Length: 148
Image 1 (cartoon, rainbow, N blue to C red):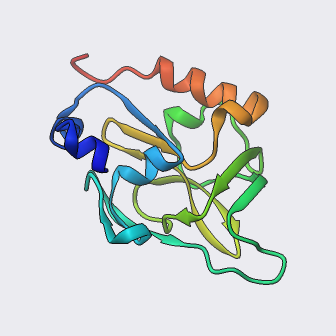
Image 2 (cartoon, helix red, strand yellow; image 1 turned 30 degrees about the vertical axis):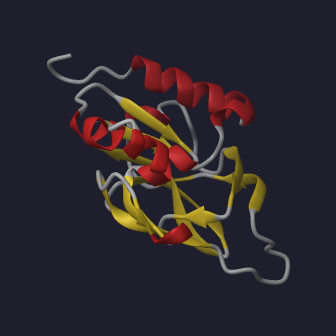
Image 3 (cartoon, rainbow, N blue to C red; image 1 turned 90 degrees about the vertical axis):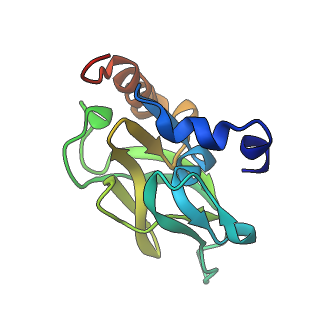
């Protein structure tokens, strides 16, 4: 956020009307805030990222393959199926909210993908998620917004 503010992108990004895709930290920045340094983010999507609680068998960061639970239809998820696997590497996560289109679990459920107006996001890394990730990237590139 420091870099976005330094370059006045924190003012520009929320005004964009074309599809915008945030990956991992980029998805978290679309939300209101993060517990990481008590950071105020772009506030495009309601919600706050919180650090995972460490537990036996659940180290932080959450790193590795995990399944996707599709919560509702989204152009971002066309062609994906329940429990397809994606690759995650992160220490902070967003709760499941009205913007969530796919979730997963690491202890508790959290948001894996979002769609909010023209803003899309994936907490996982599509570039490391084999065919599922390639499909998500193809789907995003095919999204057209009205009046675009």
